Image (cartoon, rainbow, N blue to C red; front, side, top):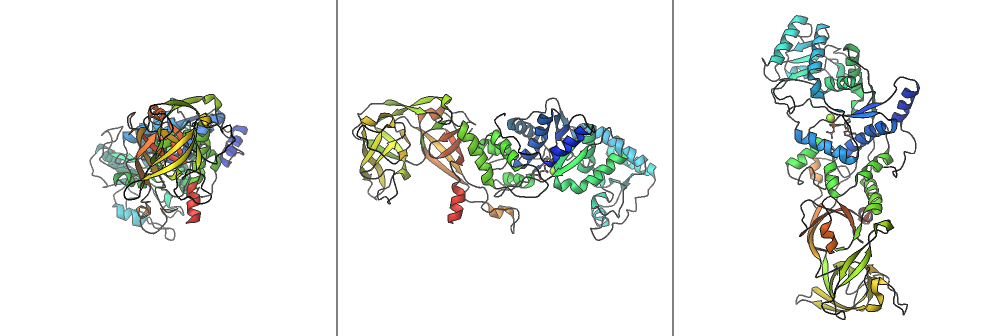
Length: 560
Ligand code: ATP
Ligand code: MG
């Protein structure tokens, strides 16, 4: 990763860490990435992963992967596995520091008992609706629960019986006794435990009471001796509650929480709940649909991990809410792929050209450069023969003045092969062009200019018809047609782009492309970057368009 851009200046979080190390408050950093395993990771998570694991790398510290798995009904091992895979793919490693909040259930329970004994927690038998209305709002202070001052012994007894499974879901909860008139609503006697008779993906049916996220998260950090507990801004007004727990429970360390702004991107949604809805309602083919902003989706789309890391460095870490342009991410993708992706020729919308002066049955192996940005990538051989395919829109029968590609009587260079002139246009009864006839100049082998000094203005790509491999190519566009699908009227689903997927079933590829392995991204010359998909085979490859060579989308918008 040494060739990635260095951060230009330190962000405010790294400055705080520098101070903490300089003052001797800490002698190293321990950070963590704490996903809830209730969905696949998305690009927003990548920002947090790059921050937390990045700090560990830069400061020689460590970064834990901890699953905050307090919600048995929404969580699943499928999510745990995909999250691990995505973090590794991004290029990070938690080493032996893999943890689960559910590993701390026993300890959290003991601490809840401790709080009850200290007179700082009580079992509340109000209904959920009563608890909600009793909490008040920003203008109105809350009112105390009638159970708030019940004897410690009674709460202890009920809490133990909650754990033993004596009561049904929602019959009672354990609440912290803080302050029902507190200006911060999070401190108005928050719920610590609820009854949920549900199997947990790790603890099975051992528990039927589960700690709330707010009661779990900060103490889990403390148990793991996290030094800097980095989270997004929506947790800012939970910090006072987390601090209250740290002050009132005998925790082994005191992490410092620092909030930063979330990653938001236009033309997409980035909440797991909405992404899950797209999947379950089959608006996309799955969590790894290449249009999804999930890490598994963009991986399948062909985005390189290095591009995501570079993008996260470019946008930096601040406390300001903002929305980043998807085009910025796509540029980061192009920058990496331009350096890395091997070039090949593929024709997406083929039209046949018969080269009438080329000997029947002859095949030449033309030498083509694999990557002009990387001479060490060498060359490959591409078969050339009498019948080839070119891109339908590289030909025009009545070209406008500035059209330099193929037209009747005009000459172009076939990349790495020969000059080709179009002599004849063959049409069917309906007047559609079905084939072109042309002639090549044997003196231009390899695409060299001929001895007579004749020049052409355009070079086009081609594949030999007899050798071409037929393939399916999937062209993707933005999943949503509007810039802020979350923030418009109605449902975000109303903003789905109906043209986000176009499937081309008759593309023709140069034969070398048949051996590109699934997950590898290549450049189709003049067309863009394409990633081999797992749905394909050697006989019939499937390619996903990763991104075009240029930001054609911005252009289209300006014209529109
Ligand atoms: P979502 O809102 O998509 O459901 P979440 O915050 O509920 O996400 P978690 O699994 O709790 O998902 O997130 C794990 C970590 O990733 C948290 O520390 C969270 O702050 C961070 N994170 C989530 N979304 C973003 C984002 N858009 N930008 C930066 N960090 C994020
Ligand atoms: Mg969350």
